[in-house]
Image (cartoon, rainbow, N blue to C red; front, side, top):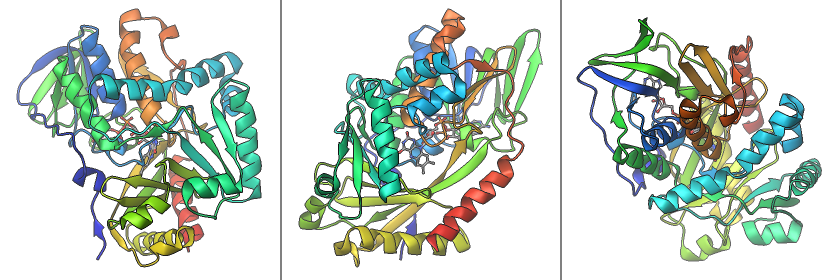
Length: 418
Ligand SMILES: Cc1cc2nc3c(=O)[nH]c(=O)nc-3n(C[C@H](O)[C@H](O)[C@H](O)COP(=O)(O)OP(=O)(O)OC[C@H]3O[C@@H](n4cnc5c(N)ncnc54)[C@H](O)[C@@H]3O)c2cc1C
């Protein structure tokens, strides 16, 4: 019987726990949300000497940061030319250039702080599911190579060798990228932020915000924090229990299923160099290895209600299509998470009010960007120069159709998986 349980929680080598807020405090910065964005902002702000309080409604890593695939990719989901097209060539170039280096920032932090998160920096592979996908990858290669990025097109034979399946027409390997145990990385960031002086509180939801005499007061059930600056870092997990949330974006649900342990023989025949990969299909599939000889398959979809039946049945079929020897391997567990999709797929840093900010909308690529945006936001508080930020501050964000889009994404995934 397949269990609803997050394998990253079961297999995490990093431990992190923080108390509940039970007193009134004051701080320079209050961060709401303990994911990559919040923990990176708290870590950098503490390093820079700010008095920081981070409030997490559940536990650090409860959101996307503890549930994702663990592909530490460079850039955004959109190819670099598209990013420049959307936000203008100067801003686009700045963002693309910054996020090209984001995997380096992540792997450096891991190394420097000995974060136990199974880091493997041996590239990730975008796999062409058909000829159209291959054409898309050729364009991506040209765009990245024009920016001197170490990407390489793989032919059918080469990709079969690297993945252990003949399902793909070719692929694009990006040598800047790699994989991590995502929850381990997040807990490591939280641990280091705490060690640098950030005060982290779990099970402490921010439920209200008040403004008095030029200062914010963040209210939680058992204590308040007065602060000059507040950062909303809740992203897709901004729930209605907070009076004010920065983001109302469309949501894509994404699920993963993990196999039982595989025999050494099968294990070495699949992804022998352990790159993580995903394909070019509009309803994409991801495949990667995880510790304990397990393989993870993931795709868009919310495995609840009828969706549970449709998506998990699809996952069983898909894994045996890709790797026929796994036909009877079976899954041990599955879990899912929510992804915040901004209307133009570009992440946002929003100024909601004076000294009140929100960061959201990584649109499916948040490990490198979340770390980078959080870090840069903390630096911006010191420099006060918008030049420090990877994107211009937005004063408003509206996606009138965010609810409809969320429904369409899920229906699309269900139809495709049927
Ligand atoms: C299934 C899945 C697969 C993905 N795969 C990848 C991938 O392979 N590579 C990649 O780069 N990106 C991937 N992503 C995207 C990436 O995981 C996210 O963009 C990233 O984790 C967002 O980090 P965050 O810190 O902004 O938000 P989150 O990690 O979602 O953290 C937000 C936190 O805010 C807390 N919160 C909410 N409300 C309150 C409140 N009122 N008070 C206090 N706390 C509150 C939540 O409990 C949560 O812990 C994936 C996402 C998902 C869901």
